[in-house]
View 1 (cartoon, rainbow, N blue to C red):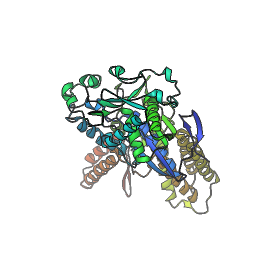
View 2 (view 1 turned 90 degrees about the vertical axis):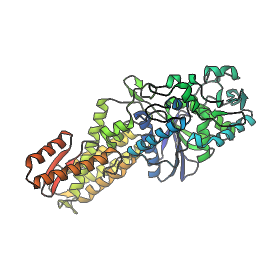
View 3 (view 1 turned 90 degrees about the horizontal axis):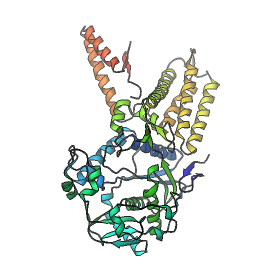
View 4 (view 1 turned 120 degrees about the horizontal axis):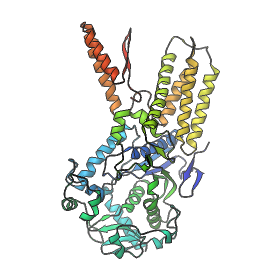
Length: 498
């Protein structure tokens, strides 16, 4: 089968054909590091990670680049708050460190590089100079703007006509621009207090002081800072070349950010900037999207600490990347149930396949057929625009087949069960699920803590302190840890997802 993806550029589902049949150039618009990463970010991260995993599963070498926007007025607004740092660079560094830790806790594959805007100022200036020299951009009072009327295809990604596009940028830029829809490539001077006022939180440094820490650089047009849109064009072309295979980002970035990326990149290089544009839909909480600006978010570290990596990935892949998804207690509970079903089936299959009851000459055609069907259904789902919802259903069908095979039998199909274990682990890995405990975050720590408590309990029992030993068991079970005493010693199950 051929992978098909829904391309925002054409509005069609198309067969995916990379420029190099063995390699895929994948760029994802990363975070502006001004707030803790939340589940809205995690949703896009996980789906990009699944894309990366599936492409590798299909045999491609994936060059995955994801940027950090570490220069922004929102970052300046956080200076001095909650020990985040006493300057724009320090606040950005604090949140980059937290973001990388959250990525690891979600079991994300590492990108090839995580470029930062502050590291690519020379490339940004070179790109702006090229646009000025080619007549697509102009200087005005020390700032540089892209002339949208100079690029004939402006609006092709967002499917808008130029005369329908409203003014871009701050109101005080209007007098400097030729057209209201022109956008800034380079901004003169630094950051003014008024630029950050709406983004400041209680406890932040006074606006005047915070703005003094904002970074600026020398340029052919004077001291200043890069515009937001030019940054991604410079970083992506620096690390992946002039034409990307896949550019991924949030649906809310189609306009103006991605539209402007297309215009400035193609104007500078005379090449198509990205062949396939994939856009992740936003998370919904009640009737609003989950976002930092609305303050209605659950942070990644809170979610992983509470539910564990596997439950969160089960939840986040329960809907496809380009479908809307609702965050609620009910949807989390459903994900917990699905992960528990998968995990229990895997454990039962491992226990059965390693038992004396697993026989070489026992064959269950229903079990073996179910595994074959699951492989086909999983691949068909993933090749259909990375349909993780249907792929997850295929995994659950393997769990059901395991349970049906084991029910009421005294002898098991060894080869069939071995294939179910391999299938759950192999295909589960595409969704970033781990049946072997090899995930990061608090779940691994939880297992270590339980082991320690059980060691103490065993010592109490050895010393004859049975009441204290029972108390320790009761404490663990009150936390959702199921303890089972066996002849070989105690075993336990962590709460679902851990």
